[in-house]
Image (cartoon, rainbow, N blue to C red; front, side, top):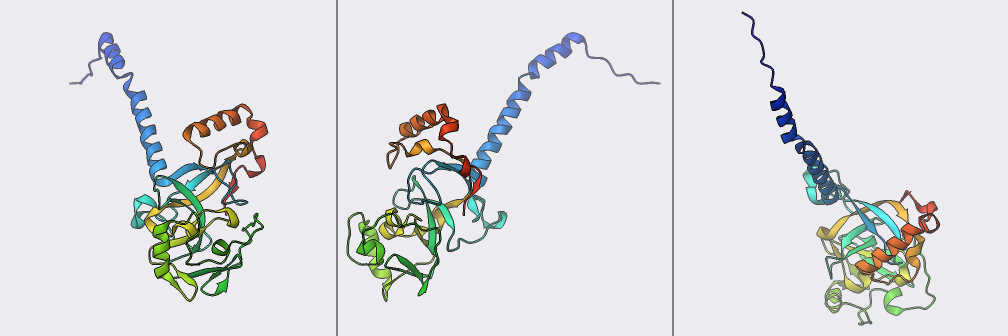
Length: 257
């Protein structure tokens, strides 16, 4: 005996198709959202440079893609490719004094290092560091900034950091404690960095800048030092309206080093 498959009546087929017609697009949209959230949370994230503290390496208006897996990221060390943070690395991190803020600086000292500045020149463990990326744009000589560490209390120094620093200075050198990093900006004379507020804890590190995917010259125009969300939107709209004139094409897709 031969078995035959019963055909679905046309009206039932149409009903089944109508019932599931919205399900496919909805599942596709949900999958896209989940993947996007995963990538932003664990893999890569976009940031924008609002200040000049890392000039000339990073300029105001540079848009970065940050690699969040490079140092282990939020997936945990056993599951992600990573390497330890090293001297000379540029890192994006949660500002220790106000964690919701994101800072980007260069690592000068890693745990156990002894750091000091003599006449603006950085010494680590008694050896002068070659820093071809550093620029000096201010002519005056500042004892605290340029002859660091000093135990006086200058304007802008976090008081808690001042108390901590006194315990970590030995023979005129600042000792970087375990699990922390000493960071400074490449625009060395105009950078609010570890000299003024202290170390970056390992857990505050988000990742490393990977590439400049866009750079807008218009962000230099009357942009506040600490821009509000409305400032950023206003400048973004202005740049979008003049995209070809405001884009720094020579910086687009530049690898960050």
